[in-house]
Image (cartoon, rainbow, N blue to C red; front, side):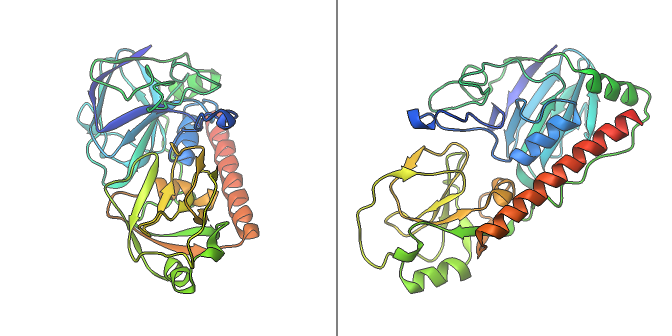
Length: 328
């Protein structure tokens, strides 16, 4: 089966959970900005959670389906339509041959995900299909999708075929609720652990970090979110060797404006680290649009672990519920 790109949109790439195990060689993880939405999209069409999907940013992608195809759309709401009719989100959808799926501008969130039953037949490099744009590897020829590209889609499994049967009989009335996993509000409180250099910032800056809001600037992308707000200062200058960084690491460069490292982050960084966004809040962070505001809230390591476990348990419950709906 195949899907043709009629319009590429602002930035649409093929992403999965990420390229792990090669950071010691300088190869970044990449992967979905909002991994919860990607995982749930895959579950909704019967795929493994880490299968590659399309990640659509802010607006504009249009696809034409050359065969009947089972898909699911999750993440932000882009007022997507199928042949002019609003497409449902957070549930399986059967797209008929020659139909056109169009994504408009995001009215909620900033990234949408499209999973195809059977997955996308894309280049797998170092164990991942994720597109690493700067190195031009993975995904579709290592780049963002362009007009005229044709995506090849695999064959669905038994669960996918059962879903198609239900949809064909119009015996379908359910969707999943993501509200406990992802916050799409554009004014968010993001929970953070103290960074390894937190103590090196002066007391006033430490207080500012926890109490003052920061705005997401338009100079933000998959590599990092640049924030704007009250500047943060060190108690005294010091030399910091480059150290390992991860998704959600909050660095403070010389201008005092925080940078949050995102999915396409580098493997090491030399700026002082004031905080680390907890894993449970990364998907919510990924759905912020430029000009959104952020306040940071301190949590403990134990609290962060409990929140992550809670989210993973919820995803497992959703997975169980999907199987129950299909087979009962």
